[in-house]
Length: 131
Image (tube, rainbow, N blue to C red; front, top):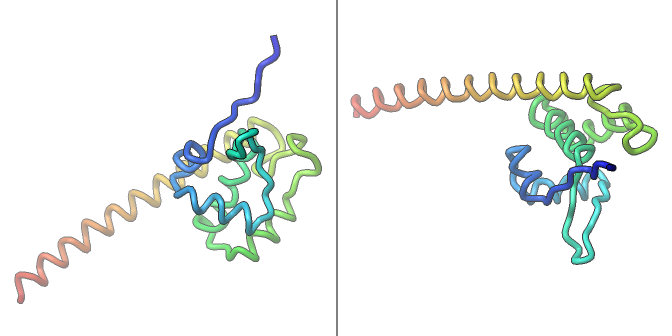
């Protein structure tokens, strides 16, 4: 039995990336990404698309690239054919390691932001007491 590739809609992709749908549509336009469409013209994405959008998100949000810089970086790591190579690594294992590393970095950043919020709330409370 042949396994069918996992496909999902824009809402699920947005949830997986923790971003809004309009950002995905914007990135599609800016980065010239062509997506699969159903007969009803709904967008469908696969694991390759998820990896590509994960890389774009990392470049823009994680590493501070501009859109122009991210485009150049994507061109540098661009696979020759769809599925033949992945910009996140040369094998599935490399890709999974890279994704795990990105998840860890995002978790650490989130924890830092949460700590900053606590600090800011404390400072705000002290300022209110002074007023």
